[in-house]
Image 1 (cartoon, rainbow, N blue to C red):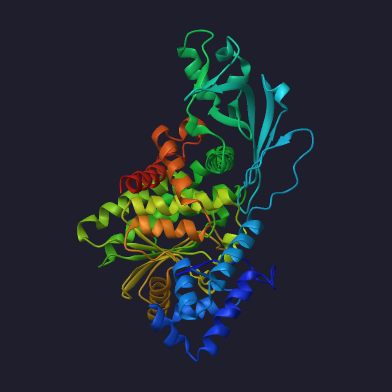
Image 2: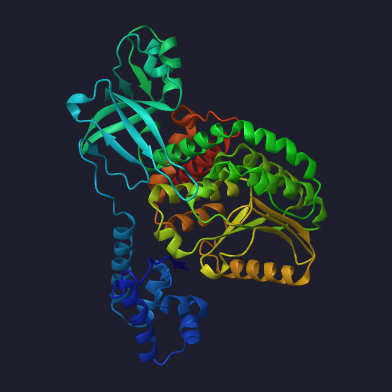
Amino acid sequence: MTEHNPASSDISDGAAVTLATEIRRLRNHAGLSQKQLAAQVGYTRQYVALAERVGGNLPSLELTLALDARLAAGGRLLALREQARAEQRSLRHALPPAPTGAQQLGFASPLSLAFPPADQIGGSQFGISAPAGRFFAGSTITATSYPAVEDGRVLVHVPTGLANDPVLRRPGRSLVIGAAEGPTGPRLFGLDSRAARTRLTKAVNGAPLLIPDAYELDDLTLAVLWSVANLDDALLDDDNALAAAEEHLRGVDSTTRCAGGGDLAADLTAVSRMWLGSDFCARHILRHADTLHEVPAFWTREQRGEESSTWVLFAHKYDYLARTAATFATTGVNPTRTFCIPPQTVTDSRRPERILLLLAVALMESFDITVQVCAEPEYSSVTGFALDQRRRAIVANWVGHDGIWQVDVTDDRPALREFADACGYAAAHSVIAGPTPPARLRALADYLDLDWAWLTRRCADLGDYGTAGLARPRSRLLSTAGLDNACRFLGGLSERNAEQ
């Protein structure tokens, strides 16, 4: 197996390039072809070729160890691999300059958390910036901070009567933050202001506010806040226009081939266009699923956590996954779904966005969908489809299309051949190949450079409490059901590993 490599044009003399060159040099010195070396270390020729390709994927730890031993490198290949991974991390985790006038907490995050000085914590207000992305327009979450203590719980000392304070009753998204001293600085715990008001209203007057420690602000919870805030704001702004578009589209639901929708969405935000296209494509697939004679292979266009967050937060996508899972549950064969995620896309994404991508895949695996990841960028242009073994395909695409959607039901032979070739390559070269969901998800965590033990532990905590207490959606089109399901599924893998 292989792991992704950052753009080698940025590190032309880096360890990743040296590693690929050294493997090739040692193989040639040993008088071996790629095929011969692959056979001797128990891998296919493709893996050796990828390991030798400058600018390609890093070989996995297991493959590197095998190559180091067979080529008598004395540990040099392993050392180069570790140096290359360190260079990857330094590129990915480089943070922008901290703002002045406040403490910038060191999250490798798309969110900027400017926290007030320690002597201003009691009742101080500050902003959590949820910046713009490729689709997100950007948002700011108002937060009010109070001192907190940890005694196995998080107890926040809030002023008496806070439940009736206008701060907790203002419209829009806001958080109550408890700041507790930690060994390396303040640890921050957030609670949605509506949840805080409910708890304080029911409690004895003057009682501290109890916040679950699962709601500590870190890369996982800030990723949730970033996506929920941006999706929520955009969908609420366009709610009436989206309702009118939904009504209009019911008249074209029976259409087998359709592209466009731009006339319905001229004044909609990018997120609302995403929702409209995604909803239309999901209904298109469900309408025509009975035309497929076998369990299909799906191909999806999402590459980053930003667009993948729709899988765990759009209410209709969770319903779509549940219905498709029920459709194929009696066949005894799991559907497959392929993502094309090139290494450069991973390198360009910060850790919270990569977490959102992993959560989307975990949600699919929880519905017994076997996920594959193709790393080759030439497949990034393949449209979204559901393929029935070359006989028929349902085309449904809403990511990277000129209009809002592109849908079709086709038995066109060249199109089916192209789809089958893409699926075949992905199945043979998936960078997360494994026999079980835990194996595939752990391989994906490695590919995305995420700490598996930390992430599964945090997901277990967050799944137990649910994410609504931290980031409750206000739009009728959003739901945290998929997000919670994904967290619980990943958390269950952590518990299973602990028992083994």
